[in-house]
Length: 175
Image (cartoon, rainbow, N blue to C red; front, side, top):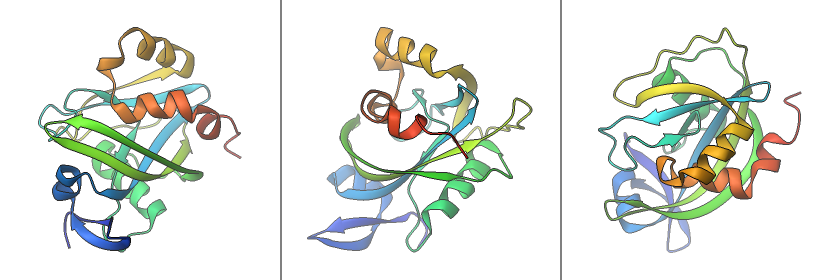
């Protein structure tokens, strides 16, 4: 069931093609991960070949769980597939819901499980060029300033996370 993701159709959770979920604006499940080193967060700029929001800056990684996949397992899988990151333990920070136009006639209507992972400055990151154009570390304060100054450089969901959900995502210690 490759590229089949959990989405709600007529109130029932069913397996739906990922692209169809975005084209039809169906509410669907998602996972977002923020890798943190103290007050720094690892960002990725999405590959230019992505079918929506190409070239925009986003959180460390974001994806959709495959049909039947556990959310935390999905977070670990996508850290490895997108960024070559191994060995981090995702900590669940709650659920976020949002709806946003992501261009090309597509809509993200997502129920997102948000995870954070603690990492050190020596974290090995090997971006997959099919997924990620580049990565960088920045502080949360600097990121807020960048988003305020040039919001169109960032994905809608990253702007929503920082504006509406920052305390939930970043406000507690990683334990």
